[in-house]
Image (cartoon, rainbow, N blue to C red; front, side):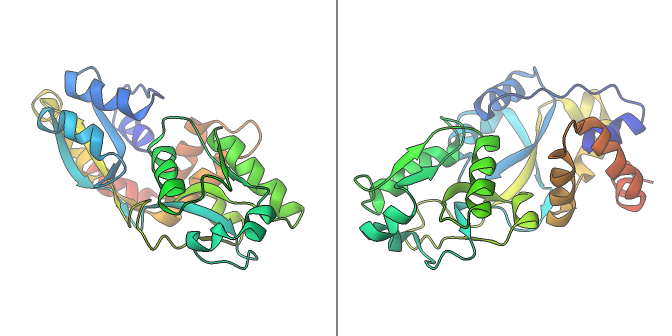
Length: 243
């Protein structure tokens, strides 16, 4: 959406899909200009610790909660990770926690949660991707089975299914976070108008959930769905553009 808005303002914008560690490094070295998905102060803490003095944090862009956790369908009759130790409960989950990409911050914290809640003998944390995670969740719900996945909000799955995030009394997976915009040093001097647009960029969790849902459609083009959202939200976009 920010790309679409910047293009509307006359800029050529290239988006680079890379791992979190790579984009922080690219911003620190000046090889990239901006990112809008810095999960702080917990999930991306290690990355920021390494490059914090070499980048500029423009502040929070999402008006709504940002949280990591283990997600289950609402019909699952436990409410806390601490309840998962029961072998009967583990059996209902087929002794599996469906994860995402190996190396992701959420997976690292999930490994810690397995140890903290003494679940290592009962569960296997399955590596995969965001797509395989949501596919496993969908298949479990269709079969009315128990399934637990590593998840986060905001995410389109909460708009599509009735879900809940299991309580994490030990706070191993972190607490409610914020999503910030990070830019390279010197961007304000090099491209002051673009910097101002990026600095004004903000939206809420219903906005991002809507676009995420559009992007799950067959043959969806993220650039086109972004343009669609921008066209349908001129008042918000004009604020970004300073109009």
